[in-house]
Length: 89
Image (cartoon, rainbow, N blue to C red; front, top):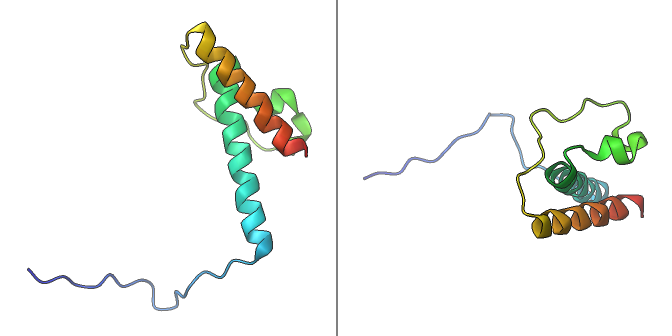
């Protein structure tokens, strides 16, 4: 079996990320985690807790409250508020 290399676009080069890009990526992950845990525990997202963070962007589509037992729901809620705290810092 012969393997052939995967070729990208002819003008495609390496992506160079500076410090700002890396910080923005980490911040995006914090937003994702906050949305995940808030929607899972409470059934609503970050825009209901801190509307200014969404900056007028559209709400998530398809996020619903998870069917969790009370202990796991409380843990999810605590994680959610912790992520909101990370965004506020």
